[in-house]
Image (cartoon, rainbow, N blue to C red; front, top):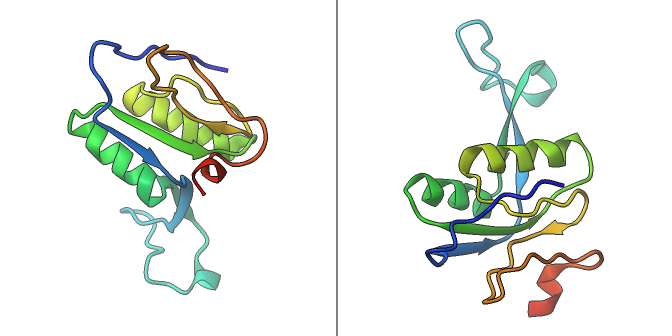
Length: 125
């Protein structure tokens, strides 16, 4: 488990709730031209962090907004890829829990929390 410290001097500009995914796109570079082929003919893929809320979080963070993201990652190499990407990109994740919902608790007490079971979304439905 990795802990990253937040800049506590300013409030969050935006907190996003939703899915994060890994997009596997056909590889395309000077040596490999796999795009625009039917899937059954593609042999090489590139991976990218995706999912609309995750993409928005990345974009607004790159524009200098202090951003939070609430999502779920798996307890495997895919989950590690996603959490490593967020940590390297912005250093904004304060709690990345394998196989569990991870989120930043932005309450006045400033602590970290997580759900071991269930879905965070159930609290809002």
